[in-house]
Length: 376
Image (cartoon, rainbow, N blue to C red; front, side, top):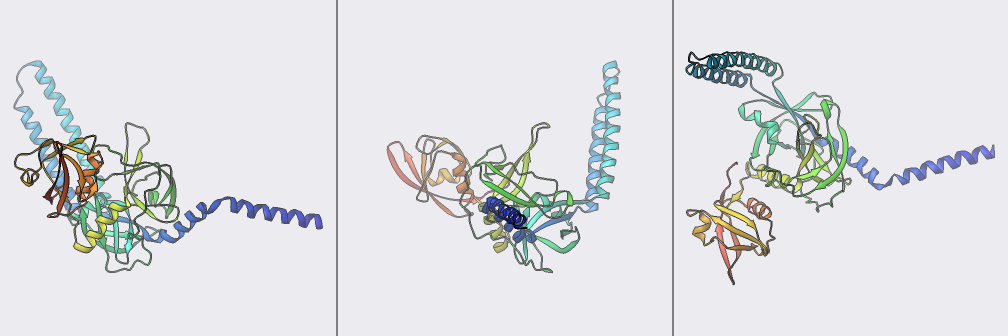
């Protein structure tokens, strides 16, 4: 009996030791999931059926116009007649595909995405999720059972960063994500997690690592996306990403695919999410400052102005081709043009920026007033 007791005690001690071996990281992830998962919601946005029918009619009309314009080119030559028959067949196939697409969209006329509460009455999500709301579609917030818990209205969209804010006055979110803490940049290969609802399943945690910063894939320069290996499932664009301790790292935004290879996920950093969301909540919009007409390139000591439009505000303010920008409002500038573009875009319209310029062997300050950056 004593031997049996010692065996049980040894097993119990081994289990405790194994639990400790799991580490504080695992406990932190569990705590973050339990604490913050109630702040994450599925969002369902209606595409108005009138809009679907209108787009179908417009597409059908363009198809008929294309067909008629091709008929006008038909001659008696054999080759042209064969081409005409081929076009007739293609137009018929396209027409059938449009009809199928219209019926499918009328049957399931909702866009799904994710969002998370940032205060008792506001959710943050992606503009692509709620774009249908600009057409008059209804926005519903869904719980873990995919049941509507509240209606929401679109308060505003930051067209440059893709951040949107929803407001719901008929419900109060008891749990929300803190935007006030600006996390320090975690090193590459740091452990991160997200809370999603894959394929309309209940709230689920997923984990991965940061793959890199400052990734530039054509359209990603301004957003300064974070590369990660976290899976992004359909309907989960807009889901929050956390450090194990619950610090907001950013928002799931998109995947980049080449052919049939697995996609690489990209995250909008928390700093940008917070800046856009707080501006929209406070002012109803977040407009970005811009200095148009500059062509920039890396240089040894800063960023070189390679070209400048003749009629630009920048030229009127005193900037010239060949100037090297070495300072921005008193801070040193590195030689990455996209970092400078990002710093300009963080300003507001009609805000003055003081550039420190190296022109030949001379140093000088040039003050330029920003304008509103238009969607590109």
